[in-house]
Each structure stands twice: as structure tokens, then as C-alpha cells.
Amino acid sequence: MQSMKRRFVCGGAVLGLVILSACATQGAPPSTSSPVTKAKNTSQPSLARTFSFSHNTEAKSQSQPVPASTLPAHATVRPLPVHPSSPVLFPNIPDDPSIQLYVDYFQYADHRRFKEWLERSHEYLPYIQQTFREMGLPEDLAYVSLIESGFSARAYSRTGAAGLWQFMRGTGVKYGLKVNWWIDQRRDPILATRSAAQYLKDLHDEFDSWELALAAYNAGEGRVANAVSRIGTKDYWKLRQTRAFSSETRNYVPKLIAAMLIAKDPAKYGFTDLAYHPAVVVRQKEIHRSVEIRQLAKAMNMSVSEFLVYNPQFIRWATPPRLSSVTVNVPVDSEKGFSNRLATLPSTAINPDVPVYRVESGDSLWSIAHRFHVPLGKLIAVNRLSSRHLRLRQKLVIPVSGNTRSNLVATRMISYHRPAGWIVHRVRRGDSLYLLAHHYRTSVKEILAKNHLRSSRILRVGDHIMIPSR
Image (cartoon, rainbow, N blue to C red; front, side, top):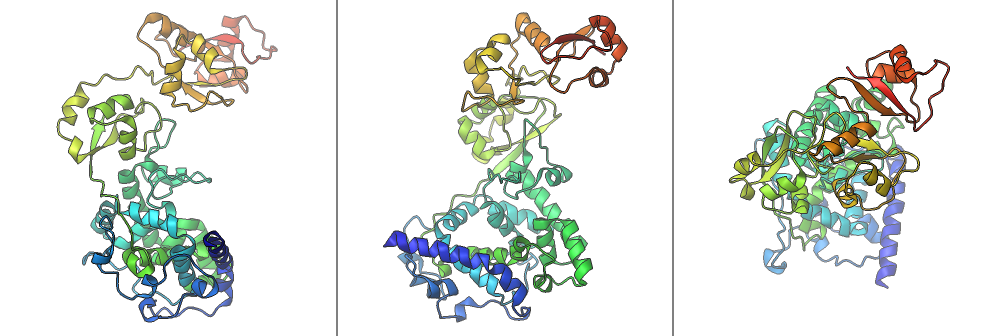
């Protein structure tokens, strides 16, 4: 019976969310002067009136939080007040039915997952609010991360958005975040929060409306600007009544408001057994060379998995070799003596010019390890491979040891710039003499002469040719 009730809950919630678009386009324009006052509404919410729920609804109808004495010993349920110096995000919340529908959805159909989000929220919420306050932004913008990622720095969407703020690659790079094969700073909770604050500030400066700024955060500035120009209004709630926005953008602000209302007073909405995670307090330290992650973790007196909890931005076995500096998040209880221990750590043997090998047809981990005289276990470890299955064109780091033989092998098999002389290049799919000459800053004539080739010859994948180095 309980599982049947849960099916009814999820089915009703999904059905309700499907008709949100119709609510936005067919209903009367919302009144911006009447705030949502759920405490005064003693009747059951729309989803609760329609379906049966397995959760205890007694606490949900109360207008005051449940007394702390009735909560489990580990629970910490409290509203999160806005700092007096912080601007108000929504001075007047309209009485829009889509807001209540999302409240019902989070409260009932998605109760378990939303509970996890709330419990995780306090890890970085104090830092996020402080950052927004310092930039003169409303603290309640912190809850954008709640609906974007559930306050998870490791969140990654199917469309390629990543981190607490679900930045797309282009937006992240535009706002100063490094995103490459070695590092993804969109997942750095400290750096990404600063970038998100600046992005939201720029959007508000452009549209002079937090509702439109949030819509642009979801859909992009261009789409919102076009909608404002085409419809002739900068009122988000009026634009919601048109087809100018997608259904997701039409419901983005109502979804945020619903999540914010619950997060600021969770007990009122039935979340009475929350065990908030402790706040994460870190200091940022700069590293000016490439260091192995396991060495950094050791310098912080923690395991690699613990290190990555604070530093999810590192996605390979070492810090990037090409960046002149990179920041690492150090917990305050590990900060003492870290700088001294860091100074003693050896730099990696990564050659910044040739950090990776691209998998070709017929390659296997064993053949690659044998070809480069690298232990198979080390090749798997440094690339953090969970499977021995390789994909065509997949990139693998080839750890180069200090001995001459290994360096020579790597030199022969991967395109590598010697101080002077020639490069042995293995022809890959798509290569041409013109492209190779352009890439290595030489001429087709020089390549032809060195390799005794005629201009009419077609390169074959797997061939090795000599190219003059510059």
C-alpha cells in the first residue's frame, strides 16, 4: 500500500508539472502585490487534496516550526534569516499557482531527494551568502544552487553543465574559470561561486530585474533580450503568460521561489528530521607547479578521496602542468604547516608539451603500456581508469620516468619537440602534409625532402614520418 501511494504521489506531481506551462499561458496575470502566505492557508495543498501521501501531514499544516524538543537529537531545523545588509530578492511574491505546485512537488513527490539537498546545503551556504553580500547582491540568490545542482559541486548534466552553479563551458571560461583536460574549475565551489555572483550581477545590470536576470541565467541573455523586445515588456510575470519563453524558463523563477520558501523554513513544510552537514571552511593556497594529487592529499594528512571532496575541480592524477598557478582548497584544520610540506613535494614528471596519448584503432591498455615501457598498473592508476575498455581517440596520460630509455620511447611514439633536430610523428586519421606543416611551423617541401616522399603520395594512418622541429 505504501509503494502504491508513492506511485500516486510521483504520478500526480509529474502530471502537475506537465500542466505548469498551461498555467503560465492560460491563467490570469498574477498580482505582484500579494505575497504567498501559506501559513494562512489551512486547507491542504493541491497535490495533497488530489492524492494520498505516505508522509505525516500533521506537521505540514502547522504555521510554526516544530519545537526542537520534539525533533531527533541529530536534527538541526531552523530558518535561515537574511542578513540585514542584504538586498531583498523578491519584495513581493505573486500568488501564482505554479509556485504552490512546486512547493507541493518538493514537499511530497520529491521529498526524499529535496531532503538530501537541504541537508547538504549548509556545507557552502554560509560562504555563498557572504560572497553575495560582499558584492551587494541578495543572499537569497544562493538558492539558485539548490535548484541547479542540489548544492553538489560534483553535479554534471547531460548537456555538459557542471558544478554548484551548473556553468556551461563557455560561460565558465568567460568568467575566469579554467576548463580543460586536467581541471574543471566549474566544480570548484569557491571559484565558481565568485564567478556565479559576477554573472548574476552582470545579468541584473543588463535587465534591471532579478526575475529577468534569473530567466537569462536559465535560458541565456540573448533569448531573454529577444523576448523583451518582441513582447514589449520587462515584466517577467507577464512574459510568462506568452510563448516567448520555453516551459523550463517560464517555471524557473516559481521553482526557485518554492525551493527558497521551503529551505528558509523547512519544518513548516514537513522537513522535520534534517541533519545538516557541517559547514566547509577552507583556505585557498596557490601552487605554481604540477604536483601529484596523492602527494597533495598526503600534505593535508588525508586520503585522495577526502582531498577530492574539498577539491573536485581536479579531474586527473595531477594538477595541470601548463598553468602558471592553480589554487587548491585546504581545510582550516589542515592548514597549519601545509605550505612547508608543499614546498618539499616533488614536481611531476609530466612534460607539458606532450601530456597525453590519443588512443587509435587496435590499441589496448597492454599494448600502450608495453609500447611506452610503463607498468600497466601505473598507466591505469594515473588515468583513474575504472575499466580496461578504451574508446577511439580517448586521451591517456603516459607517465614518463626519469630514465633516458623511457624518455626516448616517449619521444619516438608521441609528437614531441626536441631541443633541436627532428620529430617522429605517427600519422593519425585526418592528418595531411599541409596540416602537419602548419602545426609544426615548417613547410611541406621540407617534410617531403626529409622523408623522400613525392607530393602525390597519400599518408597512411600508422605511418611514421620525420618532421623538422623549431
